[in-house]
Length: 313
Ligand code: AKB
Image (cartoon, rainbow, N blue to C red; front, side, top):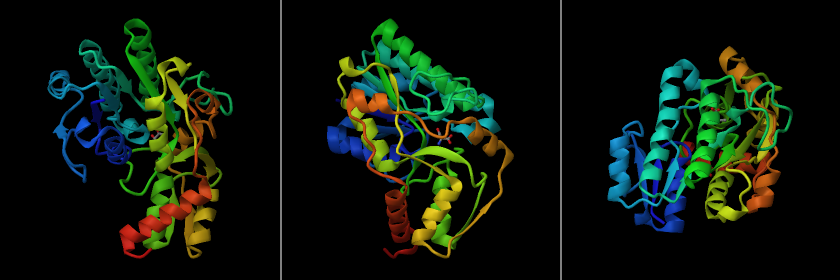
């Protein structure tokens, strides 16, 4: 399968592209992003998803059979420039879906987010639950999901995606998300032994470690279409409060000092999201099961960040 990945230099893409290349072969996975940076090798093309003509040219030139569409503006950044977030997240998605449909691309994979949920969503929501998000990012992800379902039922385009919680990783930092504190805390704990969280200590959110995230993508992409009962699936690795995260970091870095100074915007966003999500349908339909919990993830994050930031294991 020849795959195009948009937004490939971001937090997820920089780890998903190498994983896809392992499975599908290096030359069959074309990485793309607006500007080339980071360590992804060729094949690579500079591509803005808002340029439908360029997207179409790449899909034709490389005979693309599947698109993994990662390019998006996340929740906190989206609130600083809602028009940009709307443009990139919805028009970028329409372009991907239209080019895929017109060029007989077989599969489009788009991650959704817990940001589709809102304060009216009941606790521990399943895949089909009340979705009245309060951020432009969440609204654009609901639109993305609905468009994906529409293109599937109207044109038979196989659109599917994991609905992700906060993604924690050490290779490439995330940018512009509300859940990014759960990544920054590790960087600062290793570098400076202190961190000021931008949420209250009791703020609990669902999260997932990157190796589980990559596995979720690979499993979902391999799943037989006939076994899928929805197009977007909740996946969760763990759920913890900011204080529980700080306490867990302290098990490995006893001097770690945590402060909590809630930032009104990001606290409001965090408060509007569910504390955990029900991923039983993904477990049933395509064998999803997370392998990392808070403690094993924290140990691995700290070991790796010590190696890359301070040169000791
Ligand atoms: C964000 O915080 O915006 C993202 C997400 C949950 O989709 N990490």
